[in-house]
Length: 234
Image (cartoon, rainbow, N blue to C red; front, side):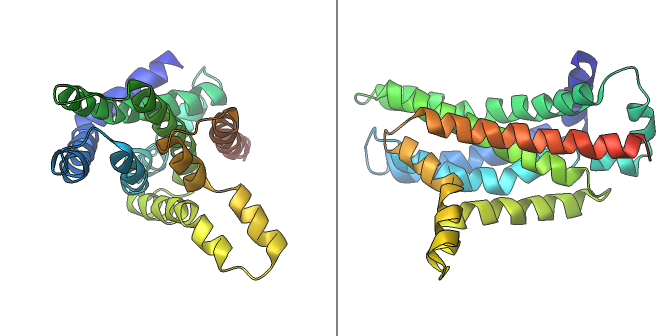
């Protein structure tokens, strides 16, 4: 898995995807930091963290669109599948490479918190809790994007499909509120990504939030491995 991980990290930076992703992520988060913290002269970063969800929905597809679709397009998928590594090592090597780049991006709010700490008191416990919530959210969304990337060789199609699916996950509460069947609305609300994330930004962090996001990541990575199993033997 280490070789796959290093190969993928290198590919992110040599292709320029890493620089574009980090620059855009930090530019948008910096705009929210100025708009919700500096302009109001407050050390409360909750509004900033609440808007980080949408940044993830827009930008994570940039990370995941090339994970597997590029292998198909460049005709290197069969070589990868016949390499002396397990399918799990291939999938998780690529997955953790994307997650590493994402973790670098979401570390920026710590710098924002340091800036604010020179003007007032910063609730560092909430900052760390929100970082963990963002990391868990990224774990789940990256696994979704990785699975979608296995279904097409076109990176643009993979990015668009990933964005649509992640946007639906963001809007699932709104969808649930417009469903007439109560049982279906309750099911949709139980799958809400944003409600769990929003509760952390308000200072409410519990183990069910961790279990939910980790479970999503495990399930979608498992499905990605199964897709490759079918291709290996087809």
